[in-house]
Image (cartoon, rainbow, N blue to C red):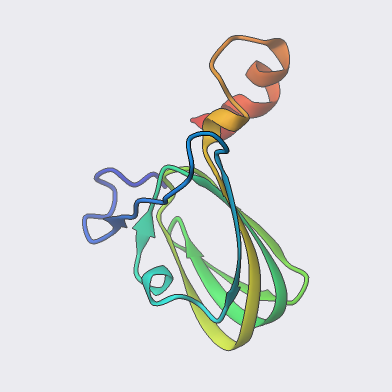
Length: 117
């Protein structure tokens, strides 16, 4: 589910990623208050659960998580997270252009285009 007008109550979140290095890696202890609200952003997000349990709501579907799980959240996909118990998560946020430049290279066209759309 893409954001824009799909869910009017979802808010757009601006991620402060440096232009020179369009990747941000953070370790979270618990789920930040901002992440518990239905939101979307232009970055792609990869989350690795180092500890704990919880639930992601991504694109209108619930996904329980536990230690060792990995989630990929697409650019502009509406999501939020619930912290059930002792969550520690490694979160990688990056601009989609890092993978997809729309330059029509065969690799990008075949493998990366689905994530860009």
